[in-house]
Structure formats: structure tokens, C-alpha cells
Image (cartoon, rainbow, N blue to C red; front, side, top):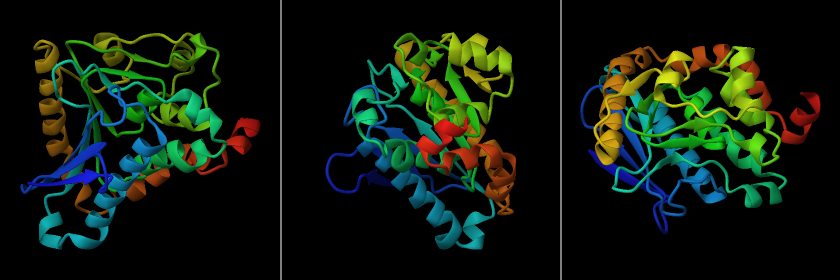
Length: 264
């Protein structure tokens, strides 16, 4: 097992672990180093993007054919410590909207990277995922949700904020029903685990085992799922197939936010 902190200088906002087993499992753990609820700030998004680029470069250029033969997958999780309640609580809203380039240079870059990532990605949602944090989970290929606690919700409607086109693209890449999207975007509905599974927003509910145990069990289940799907990456067409699947959403994410806002 190897571990790398991001950013590599200063306080770690996430850790990246790479297993020594086959298939290779990369585990990204949010540390709460900047905000305890893992808000998607400039620095935190930079750290996520740097970790994803590190894995992508390693998969594409560094690993030998022998190392890649079992495939690989990546899991992201919030911190597994007592009292941690969030996968991500969304944006640091005031700072985000004060930067006219934030969506182009930060949020959309991370969503785009996940939607085109060359190996399977699994979000281990051990607690709440709200707003842009909900979008972060939806940009992954798979989602495992804590059966003990947590809600998924887009709450912008309740505080008068328009949903950015890139965030909508991340959501709609996995949720194709207009009726469901109305419930998500225009009603700000809070989805618990059972309802999220019934609506196919998530793929698996991890068994409830108390607050800390639930988050820990969620990561265990997410890692097992990652191991099952990891071999699909070994033929090196996983990412290219995602480019075809998600082309309309990637097109929005690669467009300037102000242009996409006017176009949609």
C-alpha cells in the first residue's frame, strides 16, 4: 500500500492510497482539512483534480502491462472518524460565486475528469451529499450509500440559487427521468437510502451498523464493488466508452459556464 497526500505541500485535504493487490484499488479519502463537511472550495477541488490526474497518468503511462492485467478502480470517501457526517456539503457558495471563473476552472474540471476517467469510479457516500457534493457523487460510475444515516439533496431551490449547467450535467448524466429531475432540482427533495435505491440514484445500500460503523461499512462495500468492476478497465477502453456515453454532458462541462447558462 502506498499513500500520497494532496496537495503535496501544506495541510492534506485528501489522501490517496493505492493497494498492492490485483486488481489495483485507489482510495481517495477526504480529510476535512479545510472544512469539516468537505465543502468543494477552490483548494479542495484542486486537490481532487490533482489526485485524479495522478491516478490517470499512472494508469496510462506508468503501470506495466503485468500490473494492469487485473484492472483497477477508484473509490472516494469522506473521512471515517467519529462525528463525521458528510461525504460533501457542496460549495463554499459565497466564495464560489465571487469568482467568475470558478465553474470553468474548478468544479466543471472535476466533474469532467470523473465522467471521462479511464477506470471505474465508486463514490462511498458515508454521510450527507448535498448540492455540488451530490453532483460529485453522481459524476462517479457507481454509488454506495450508508444505510445508517445520510441524505442526498439539491437544496439550491430553498435558498434561491440557480443550478449551474455543469452541475446539472453531472446529475443528468445518471438521472435521465424528467420526473425524477423535477423532484431533485425543483423540489429539493431529500432522498434517504431506500428511496435513492428505488429511484436508481444509488447502486447499493451498505448495511447499517451505527454512525461510525455505517460509514466504515459503506467503504468496505464500495471497495468490494470496486474490485468486482475493476477488471473491466484492463482492455483500456473503459474511458473511451465513457466519452461516447457521456458526450452531451461532457460538451456542457467543456463549455464556458456563462455560454452554457445562456444556451440552456
